[in-house]
Image (cartoon, rainbow, N blue to C red; front, side, top):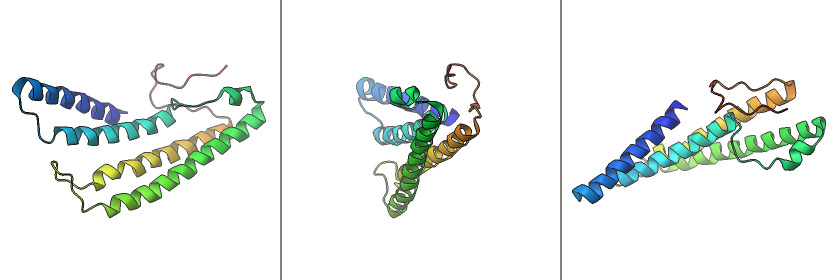
Amino acid sequence: MVIVVAIFGALVTLTVAQVFMRYVVGHAFMWGDELMRVLLIWGVLLAGGLAFYYHRHLALDYLLVKLPPLPRKIVETAIWLSIILIGCFFVYHGSILASNNMVQKLPTLHFSMFYVQIALPVSACLWIIFSVNNIYCLLTGKTLTPLHEDDQIAPEKEG
């Protein structure tokens, strides 16, 4: 979470600096737009992984919550297994894509596109880890206790 907050803090700071430089000074940073895109990609994908951890991702669960406990557990397990399979697909193909573009450089920042494109497999690894954890908690009846104890971030209790 600290990394995501730092990324979005840097993104906001850079955006304000870029607007100031463009409209007040008259000359924007040449590399600013490109760095903002890289930060946005990493920030959104890592925040998506955190959404899985804190159960804050988009979910259509109206019918799911109406199911009896056993069918609900089966459907939830199938959903998490599907997410794991999709995550494995993204890890595999995202890694291939990133490694194939290792020699391609960003025009103004002059670093490899690998560092931009590896964000998807890294994020998908988080999906897989948190989905496995959610299946474990679901099947054992244990409740997921986030590392962060803030009530505004912790998942809502059912009941």
